[in-house]
Length: 177
Image (tube, rainbow, N blue to C red):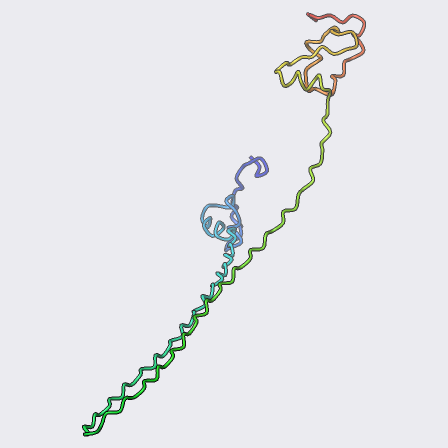
C-alpha cells in the first residue's frame, strides 16, 4: 500500500541516517521516542502574583500613670497652745471623659444598570405554536380546513414545504403504491 493510503514506507538501503530519519512513525520505529518528544509543546505556566494584604498595626499608646508621692510629715512635739486651724477644702475638679464617637463607614451602594430586554418577534402563527405546545404534530392547513395530504405535508414547525415534482400533480393519490 502507498503511504497516502495508510501504508508504511519501506526503508531503502540508501535511506537517510541520523536524526532526519526519525521524523515520523512511518520511517521505522527506532527513534520514535525522539520524534514524540520533539512534537510536545511546552506549556508556560503563568505565575499568579498573590497580592499581599498589608495589615495595619494599631499602635497602642501607653499612658504613663504618674505616681503621687506622699510626703510624710514629721510631727514635732511642741508644748504650745493648740490653735484651731481652719481646714481649707480642696475642690476636686471632675474631669469629664470625652466619649469618642465612632465614625461609621458608609458603604457605597453599587447601582445596577438595568438591561433593556429586546423583544423577539415570534416566528410562525399562533395556531401553529399552540398546536406545537399541545404536542400536536400535524396541523390542518389551508383555506378550507383540511386539505389533501395534510398528514404528510402539514407538520408543525416545518416552515419550508417539500418541493414536489410537477409530474404527478394532477393525479395525487394518498397511497402511491
